Amino acid sequence: MSKAIVTCALTGVLTDPAQHPVPVTPEALAREARAACDAGAAIVHVHFRDQRPGRGHLPSWEPAVARDVAAAIRDACPGLLFNQSTGVIGSDISGPVACLREIRPEIAACNAGSLNYLKVRRDGGWAWRPMLFDNPVEKVQAFLAAMAESGSLPEFECFDLGIARSVEMYVRAGLYRGHLDYNFVMGVESGMPSDPALLPILTGLVAPGSTWQVTAIGRADVWPLHRRAAELGGHLRTGLEDTFYLPDGSKATGNGPLVEALVRIARGSGREIASPAEARQLLGLPAHP
Image 1 (cartoon, rainbow, N blue to C red):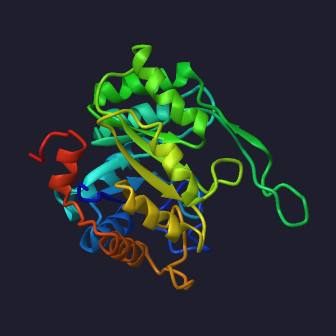
Image 2: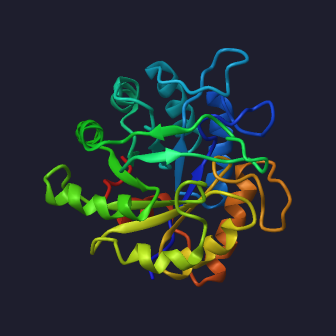
Image 3: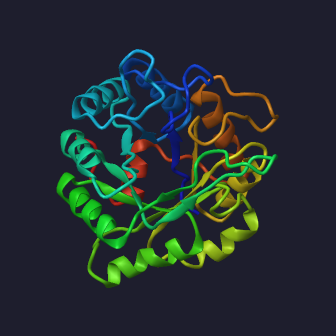
């Protein structure tokens, strides 16, 4: 099997820095990226946050924020691949597109289909107001066009089996030409569960010659899923966006320990870890200048 590419999702979209150790400022994101890189990550997945005092739990689509974050991470970690989040509710994608144009990330998340984003508390109440994470074909197509313009590889995020099946349809319909990179997002309560038994089904949907990885969201249940993904030849992702908990149940103090734990699992499954340069080759991306 090929070497495993490790991605670190540094911060997430709405995680409150007052409650959890998520980085928000360019300097903090660069420190966490450096720790993840030192632990074995070749890619960092980044959400931009509002930089105003007391608003760090909110997203930002200001190109100046994207520029400052990307510059800080690239200065701290030359050659590390930058994966920009683009997830947004509604048809207005001007913010994510402006950030793509500003920083030209090597990779950009492309949400490949819609999902009712739901979670129910133990008392039967909604954890948040039920919402539709809307990604109709027209929106996906617009993002793919923007990613082609910025030279960014789309990472097709798939929250369920139907979305995974749609990815190859985008190719057949002429929406996309190029290397296919799937990200199976597992653990969202209204999406696919963090169940290793699903992986053989999902990998059977992957187009020949493609790469795939798993985003495993949760607590203790994510680590057996990571192990199975490594055993099946998939690439791997962890970080404070996806989990706060290490395999022993203790709470992670930062992204570095999560990446270290994932690297141990990969090596225990017989996989070596790809460097950023090797990750570029595996994903069909140009070498770092």
